Image 1 (tube, rainbow, N blue to C red):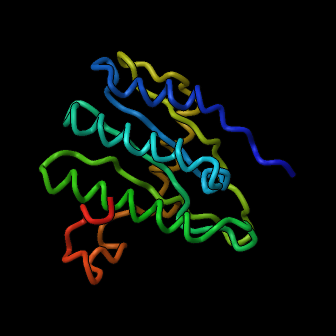
Image 2 (image 1 turned 90 degrees about the horizontal axis):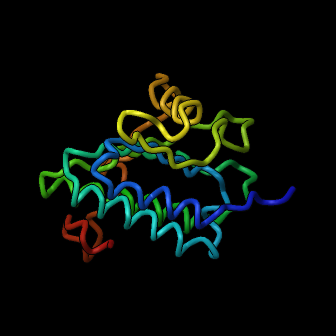
Length: 175
């Protein structure tokens, strides 16, 4: 089985749309294990930074829902270190935004069933631009999962140990 190819230019263009005042919401799904490969670290960081920058600039004018995996499938072969580091960074970023009184992206961790090896929805960035989703069907798929009781659990600062030996409960140390 080959890894899906992630069209980096398409992802960059869709995430860049978050800067537009006409965009009021976004759904970002990054559940494929390909995101944890070292070659995509740069793109993953760009996306994380673009989301945080848009939330800082746009404030209440932008709602972002992100869907990532809750935990790695048992036989995924993915690196646990990259997975944990990414979730820690997303959690710290959300805490920093909240500490400043700004809305943070809502991060939903998708819970896979014991026999599932992949997410039931495709990876995507869909934006609500002037009241219309870039792809109604895909956005609807992601929003349905987000709103299904028991399908996801939120990623919060309470889930992560941000009070390490040098952290002093200050999440900025992890950025």
